[in-house]
Length: 548
Image (cartoon, rainbow, N blue to C red; front, side, top):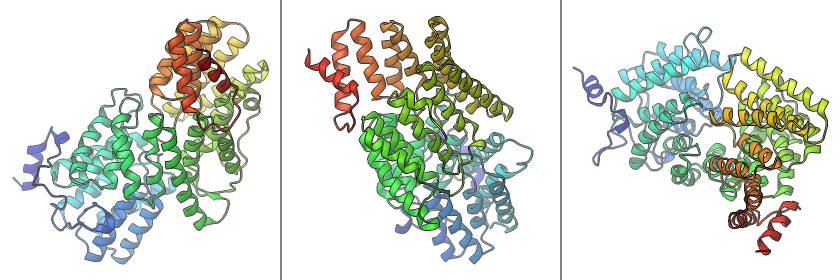
């Protein structure tokens, strides 16, 4: 039996315990050598020494999801050494953004061609052949097989690479990313994410500055239940990749989950500056890419939770200055739609919400029905809360149409996200029309459906959590006990939300729990101690606290 197969037998079934003992080394793969320029990425390949050095830097870049720069680096290696099979592997890897969105037709074509070139280059080791076979499994039959089926095929293939080469830390790290990529958003046990985190933690103990380990740990812990465990990685990541826009932003995924708004603001301010500089150097003033507006969406959300409304308005205004998009992708679509909707809904500016329109920045919303749905949802809530029944009905019908379009495309996740919005808007309209029984039934159904799904990795949060919408409704129909329970559930999933804390304070007061009400008002004032607007709710909180 070969040593490789013997290793597979030894670790089969216990991959979770990636074997990293006191004597293990990150450069145990033959030919690997540590390099300061690439942190602790030690990915040995059988190419020329100069290609090996450049390859390490390219993989370092790939681990931080700086895909354009990684693609450029791998392409340059392949041009300089066409027979370097792993350079073509890198090109194929750089055309798939596993946690963001499926490749476009052009990306599938480029990735498929690169995988074919990698195989044709006759990789010199069995290990390289397996890495290449794994990415080839993702691109194979992409005209026949759906994206998830191919993603799972890649994940299973990478599991085998990690099993066959237990001393290859990169195999374990890429397998962990694949686990995150295929984790079902409806799995509330987070089994795949937990497995990925356990693998990554073992590698992190040995390679504390590995960008992929830290980055993917953040993604693995990007859930309400696991976020606390992600704080060490969140606070470490930007320090090891300070020039990478996504690395500067990424810690805010954990900060947002935990309601650490100032840390999120600091993270995204830095990430946005780096992203804007990068894209404008490429395309000039007025240009933006997904990372530019992705960071802005996180900023918008954090500013609004701290009642920093003037700064939140500056984010909206800045968005409207953009004119040239560098590609159109999922994170970009979500941010462009969400930013103005958040600004209206978080402030309960129903008149403004009723007038929401898609930002005029030449963005193809028709390609992203769920993004257009966010704007329709905002308008529906605005119309229902300002007495425009016909307007609300029209937007609810549009939400149904957009959901149907997504179902036809077999995009179940986003179709269900739109259904949450449709139910919530319909319930809000029912309340406005005086049918509170129907209103509660509809909004509770929205909250229950939302609870079966996690947010997409590219988003900070929904534009208005369904749990909070239910709590608001229960409070409005004089059910303070039910409202208090719903607000607490909302805060359990989304800590330190301004509106949920305010609602909790009001509900506790109406329920006769003065101590809980005062504590919630105090927490709200602490949250908004740097408020720059004139929200009347803050005056209410101050009066309530001073009266006791």
